[in-house]
Amino acid sequence: MSEIFDELRAALWSVWHRRWLAIAVAWGVCLLGWLVIAMIPNSYESKARVYVDVQDVLSKQLGISGDGKEEIMRVRQTLSSAKNLEKVITSTRLGEGITERGALDTAIAALEKKVRVTSEQDNLFEITAEIGRSDLSDAENAVLARDVVQNLLDILREEHVIGNRTGISTAIGDLDRQLDERKLELEQAEQRRLIFESQYPDMVGGSESLSTKVQQARTELRDVDADLAAAESALAAISSQLANTPRMLASTGRDATGPKAALQQAQNQLAELRSRGLTDNHPDVVSTTKQVAILARQAAAAGDDVGGTPNPAHASLIAIRSERQAAVEALQARRAALQSNASGLIASQASEPTVAAEANRISRDYDVLSKNYEKLLQDREALRTRGEVEDKASQFRFDIIQQPGVPQKPAAPNRPLLLFGVLIVGLGAGAAVAYALAQLKSSFATSQKLERAFDLPVIGSISLTVSEAARAIERKRLKQFAGACGALVAVFVVLIAIETIAVGSIA
Image 1 (spheres, rainbow, N blue to C red):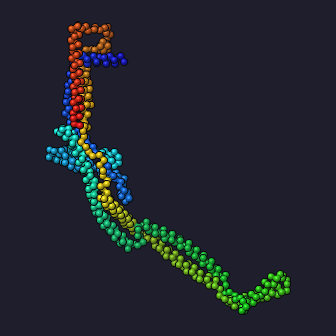
Image 2 (spheres, one colour):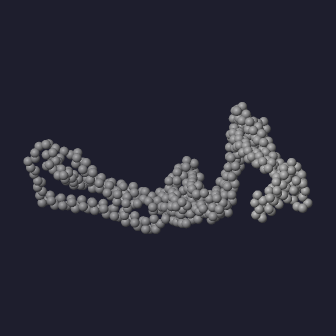
Image 3 (tube, rainbow, N blue to C red):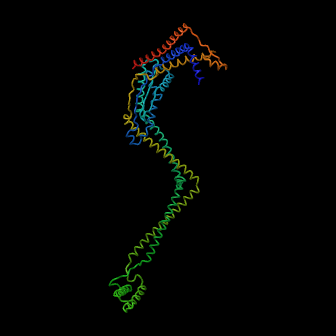
């Protein structure tokens, strides 16, 4: 720590011992730096704020509003394009004296660096232009900055209302040309498809469609088999029911004759005897039972159609059986047709792989062209609708929140800060030169430094004895040095005051 302190003390002694050199270098550096700062022209900044509404109600209802990013990007491109910057230069004093294309391109590149477009929100923009030309006065630079921003706003308004319509019309024209080309290709694909379908009707839609058809035929065949089994089961059931149903019914009543009528009367008489409580051993019951047995054998020998009437249930069952028989025959015919169709499709699938590949290609090309054509058609209609909406609603979608004004104070440079910085640099440069010159000398500022340099012990040091006359001279020189330093600071204060007065006069 002591070594660092000794080095610092030695450095301060070296600078102080050569203080006149240090103050001279400081004066030179400060005067040169302040002169350079005085030659820097003031730059004036003008601002404007623009609101672009990208979400109008009508566009939302039509579903063409989007997320606004395209509109925001278009605003930025409009304000920073070289074509529009050229318009700004030619319509303001920036274009004075420019006659060659190279000079115009240089001016465009310089203006592009001075114009900034920042987005405060998604659809709120701030346009800033900073202008500072040495050949113009401060008041002229301030007016020129305002004119640049105003021209940018005029160009933005023109491009937003008119350029948007032109861009949409151009896009619609390009889509129309693409639609004509796709329409011709689609018609050619349709013609190839029709020719192929006329030659190979089973291969319509390609091998995938053929496989689908085979699967559909098999599914239909399984369904028909199930329906046929159900129909045959129903036919068997109705046939069994028909076999157990008599075709004729026995006649009843007083006028009934024949074995069945007698049998019916005997059965009724037997039932009446039993209803009176007579047992089977009663003579009347026994005789009546024998009579019933005899009459039953006679009726069975006589047949069903003897002495009876047609049975309506039998006739109805016959009709139902006929219907079910017809349904079974129809299902059998349908099954045979499906089997034949499935066999033909399977044979085509197995025997013609080249034709199937051609069918796949034709079907795929047609589907792709058809989808592309429909998409282009939808895009064209969406653009056309959007153009009509923006033509009607564009005047409500562009608003200037803050008009550009003439700036009253320069935006750059910050002269007070630069003047102070030059003062600090000048003083530092003087001290550095004095210290560097001391390092070139072979003298030692302290006895400790001498001891470290030669690695020998220093017994002692002799102090400098100054006479009274020498002290008077030294005090005079100190006053002169203080005056030189004070004069440097005074010049700095005067420059700050001049800068403050100059800015106030412009405002």
